[in-house]
Length: 71
Image (cartoon, rainbow, N blue to C red; front, top):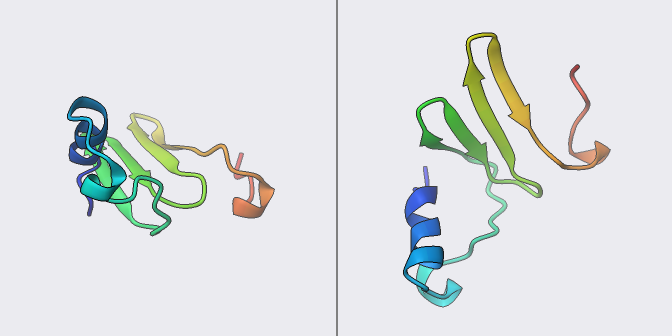
């Protein structure tokens, strides 16, 4: 898993370029935990996942080719 908080800190807070920090819009289809109960899948349009008492919520602004609506 990639430490997305460290990557964003390097870019936003430390002013590092992508040459120094590495690519920021990666399409690797990997799940990275951001915080307890919050994760992200890096894909064409990133999917954010939230764990709730009622289950898992996935937020993705991708188009229909990225997956079917499961509601």
